[in-house]
Length: 348
Image: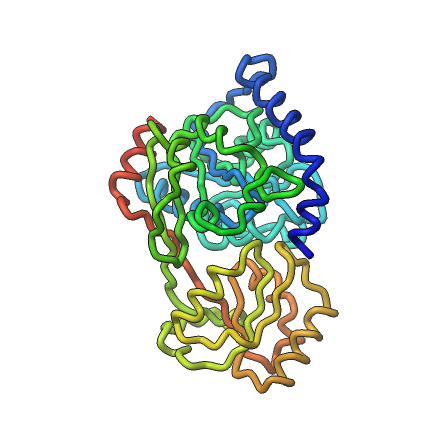
């Protein structure tokens, strides 16, 4: 059914491609002008709709920059929020805005990185307001590869390795029939390209995609599962504590494949699962569905992602009789020192 819809939508792909190519050409010829701001800017983005690992990368970069004496802040569009305009989300110590008003990704980022954070659809005006609110010397832009209005010192492009090797070639079409925001030729704009294999083994990149990486600085990355964390009590548990558990898996992320994959590797039974759409805004209706499924299947616990956990925590009363845990993960670079040296050199 999904592939049928993709085929139905395919006639609209040339229209989308024309608009994207024209827009990029106007930026390349400086008819549309990138605007500079007073601090260094590091952009993290991708070519596809969701699922490449931008949030873990933003958290990694922000933590790394702090370690090296910089004062980073994260600016995001705030996808999935129920508000508009600029919002100062966190000063690095306290989060001022609830998750539904700022979006799950920036809330998760602020919580994990302990860095100032803000949201704004307009990155240029948002960045300037952010500089007034926060004492920062570097802005990490979340999901900004396509947002070319703001000048950046580093344009980091994340690509999910599985996307390149997947047998579902229709996904590699441009929107609206595929998942691609831009064609592969746009890789030429990137500074470093990071191939994220997530929890999978390294794959051989097909020849037809290798040509786009020629002459680029390419790094490889993967996810590492750290621990399971009690959503309500914030207690950490070792991965081995969940081996063999019969849990109810709840996920509302763009591509749950890698999440389910690592749970299986951890020997958590993923047969019993509820998969919601990306950026799911949980309501009491979904909470009752989760409760019903939990008790109907005699599950030991609910296991979810951290992005989902920051939204489920507000239902602490409804989940008072159910143990809910999220899987804490981190992104790791295979050549960590080389990668960090590259980023720091670019930001000098």
